[in-house]
Length: 429
Image 1 (cartoon, rainbow, N blue to C red):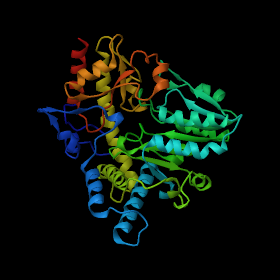
Image 2: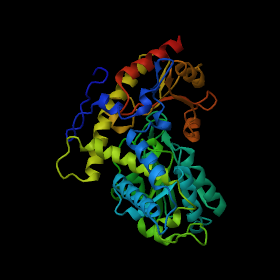
Image 3: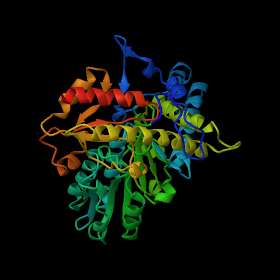
Image 4: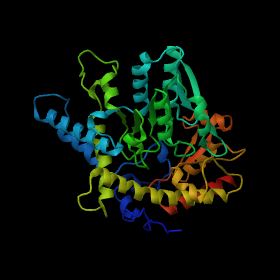
């Protein structure tokens, strides 16, 4: 296994990832408490931000802060920053146009907006499909939409032993009355990467629309909304090294056709039609900075003239190579601890089929108690249901307090994984 800060072998089309150099770009990683460094393994709930994001946000507030549409310089500059951010997110999602990108507070609020907008198209006898593997932000909006319109709610289950969707069940749960489906690209508990393209294909063949929650997948893997064949895809920027804000891609013809609730005086053009009220312009500037960070990381070793989407793809390939190695080391260490059960794929040949989010339970030991013990040693992890209510219930862990969740990303080191494993072993004693 590679030593701490060693270069991690990357995908064949990318330069090796220099983790030590990466860490210098994240000011939060230099912070300690009473001389004890902070170990950020809480990343599935929110990553730290690189200096590029901080600079984008502070520069906006210091030099460009104004409302949009004015006939003066800072307003025009504000328009330009937001336009550049739309184009960057379009590159990040593989979208055909920046006008397909909508900004919002977070993924959940954007899901509720689309649910309210789509509701008039749903009626009695229609079916709305949700899954047992999703964050509640991709369940409750659609469940409530179905209930409000008298539609039936159908569930796509997953196998609690393999941690994969029950794909053979698709023929039963997707039918001629399926009008809408909500699925996740990667689970925020098991880490499983799901075949959302296959689900979207079947839903479209039935005449329905598909909404993809890419919150957990977006930091780690390539996204190509055109290839997926979905109709909407959403993510939260604070999971991919940006600020607390959400981003939504919608198929252009749908965005043009749908009529979201809005003020009479607000713009009716797409995508502004969906951005209710004033957005957080400084957060949008930060989203631009986060995607610029990906592009800059991918530029190292990229061919001359490479496009921004190519650089983003190269960056994610380099990140994933390191993250898969970290996850492999973490999983191997957890498997050596008596009584620890990992809820997710664990095979060495399965690391590419999951993101680096790793959740465990220990019979008789409350996850919150273990998280507190690690937190006392400045090792940050999450515990509980993590909003995946159906999944935790399906695993039979609701009464036990859910799971203990680790989430290494590309700025974490092998030494930090070893520290966390040692702290957990001590806590279990």
